[in-house]
Image 1 (tube, rainbow, N blue to C red):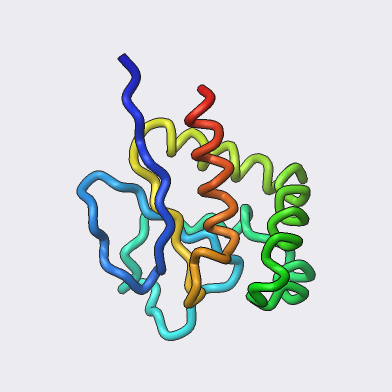
Image 2 (tube, helix red, strand yellow):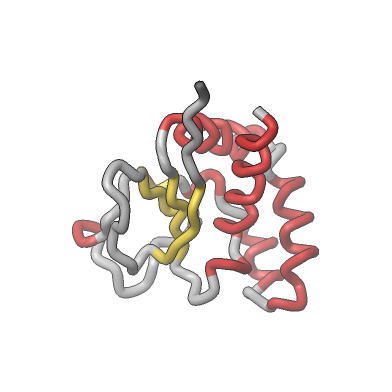
Length: 125
């Protein structure tokens, strides 16, 4: 029997909703207005975040999301990001993983790209 854990996406400003979930911030920059000691997260994985150049080019413009996602997937093959992504993969295999971002629209963020990739791996493995 295989136990399936989910990968969720949320805003870092939201409260924890599941017991046993691991909450990981995947932004490169610390969220504005959030004190580090008030953040309800288990890990800040800034190494998996998109490069500054890609993040600035994208600017959370919905019309650029598909191209952002394509470019970001390429960046995830770079050594530092690949190592961080592998760690996220390991977490997702053991428990429910909630990927957090500060953006107002998490559905068009790097967190949603990561969740899609991790969920795709879970469904084939």
